[in-house]
Length: 509
Image (tube, rainbow, N blue to C red; front, side, top):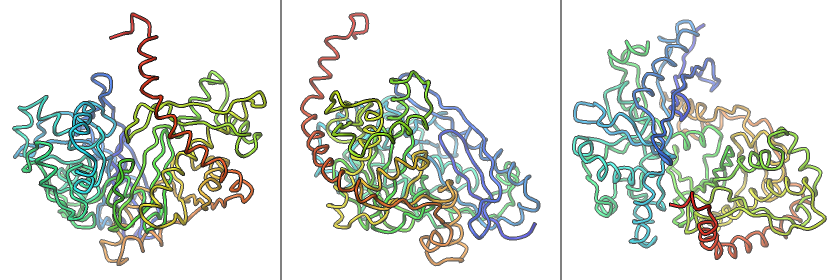
């Protein structure tokens, strides 16, 4: 085989994957090496950066072995990775802590609560572009400062997972705009570290690396890295990007007016905009092509179906069985609403939100319950879409679906009708790897802009149009859902108190 290849490396939560991609954006070979998540105590989640590096070396060698002459045919390396994981290095490039707290680590919750109690949203939204959450690396740095001061003092730089792989490949250190924008420490207007936020959080500015464009070349594969990976020494390596912005690019969601629905266990709802949307319920991440991706995370996405399968059927039915039952109920589920907050909310003042069915009557059966769950998640997503539309002044034109939820036709039709917007499904589900290829193609001069590369590379397997009759029904249901959402807030603290009062004595703190 001949022909130029791009190498993409994706540092995920479950594995490191390497892929060879041709200049037409097609994945030629792919290999993965799994790694473990460490849970030292409840609410904590860590991984070993050395495991990521070992996984990258193993996966890269595996794809090189699968394709004849691939080593010499690779023109550039592009890396993406899980966001928010805090990696600390000393002056010599050695880890000062063997493990890195991950995006889903909650150990900083008390630091977040303290910050929220002491600071009004208008005082930090413009400086950070985001609202506080335990995921942000800024709070993780505070935790290390307080809980492991020796490691904090020894550290020379704080970076993200894909930055560590870049460092091991090239010896160079930088952070892309996407990861930096979700640190809680970058000013979105200047795209530089915010002295205001650094001082307010009591952190040391010396720990923050240079912020660079994802399309820049960070360096070249060193002789040492070449021996470890099998790559040719001198191969250029891009700064790369955070995995979510990369997946947005690789799904075609890369211009204002386009949205993304990434539904897995939870759901990430995004609408591309020219500027960040400064709202306490919305997070913002800088995109590869230079726009912004305001997004909202729903803790309950596909997990709603998983809960129904366990709670109603003791796991005896498959997910397709549940969807089949839901199809038997009419749109609107005969005025039965489901509030999809089985594990609370990620942002806002009511993280202790509760799920509920509202409007149950004798007419309702299991099919209504199942459909109401699918509809309730769509209504919760639509509520946030309307906030983003109002803030950006731009209407959602198309929603691009990704994740496991993109495989459920009924759910896609419900969403298209609730949003009153067509939903597109990419042909290639590996959107992050396609995004890496689009970046590589731009950096090597095949396209002038990454969005042009994405337009050439991304194809859609399906387009689900809104059903006019369903749109009419849902236009009446959505306002009721929104009012129920707001009225329910007044009861969440009461429910917490009630749960504490009726908890068995042996379970009380």
